[in-house]
Structure formats: structure tokens, C-alpha cells
Amino acid sequence: MRFTGLLSFLFLFYSTMSFGQNTSTPVIPNSCPVTKPAEQPFIPPAPHPAKPDPGGFWFGTDRLWTALPRAGVWRLGHYTADDPTFRQKLPFWRQDYDPHAQPAPNLTVSGRRIDAKAPPLLTDGKGSGAWTDDDEFIMTGINFPTTGCWEITSHFDDDALTFVVWVLP
Image (cartoon, rainbow, N blue to C red; front, side):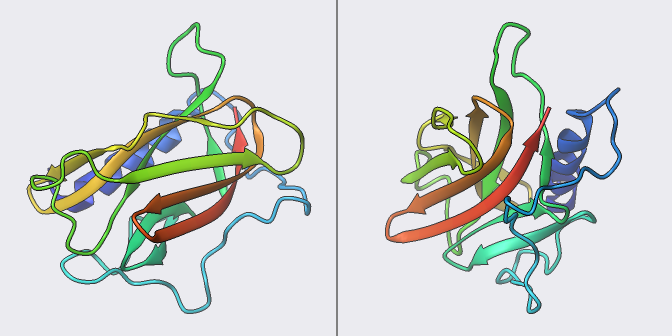
């Protein structure tokens, strides 16, 4: 799978999570400061593409970055029929990261709902090294116990990345 194929898959995965639901642009309350693209967008170092697929943007630094939805919204479903949480697969990139040398990366992800009380999000742990024919990254999964406004923070060694998304069913 080529890198652009991976991004297409990820954004297709995001969009298929809302299959059969109202896909109009949701109104995000002013109380939810979703992360938006910067005026000077982050551009990953080579060999990564300068732009992700349409509808998304790169967020972070060359030490740790991810692709976020331009609208600041994730429409999510349940991992299984009996799972009450809302599931998202979340890739991270890091300059010079080698999943073959570090298959169990030192990535941690935490999150808290900032517009109401809720239990913290659940994670798949430290993530897993992943790769395609032309890209290497870290993949992890997160489960939100509720929808709403969520602040997510990831750490890799001494590097941190925090962003806010509006989560809808």
C-alpha cells in the first residue's frame, strides 16, 4: 500500500464510520476549541508528503505529528456491537522512526472530555510500529466513553502533542 493509499484508507475509514447517518457539517459549540490548521501549516520532513489527503491537515512537529480532520470533527462508531465506546484508529509519525527497530514504540495517548464530566478515554497501550511500502508510522487505537469535546495528548519520549476534536456518533 502506498502512503497516499494509507491516507486514503484512513480518511475513508473516518468517513465510513458515519455511513447511513447525517453527514452534514455539525455545529461545534464555541466551548469546544477544536484544533484547526495553522496559518503556516506544518509540513512533514521528507520523504513524507507535504499535504495529507483532502479534508485533513498535518498537525505537530517533525518530532511527533498526526493527520487531523479540517473540520475538527470525528464521526465514530462502536468497535463491536456490544461496545459502548466510540473507536478511532490514530496514526502518528515521527522523523526517523523505524518500526522494524522499535516495533513497540514508547507512545502514550491520554484524553479528557473538556465540555462535561466523563471517564478518560481508553487506549490500545503504547501503539504498534506499522509500515507500508513507502512509509513508517505508529498506529494506536483510542476509545471514547462518550461523545463531545475531547482534548487528546500524546507523548513519545520527551515530545508531546495535544489537540482537541469534537466527537460525534
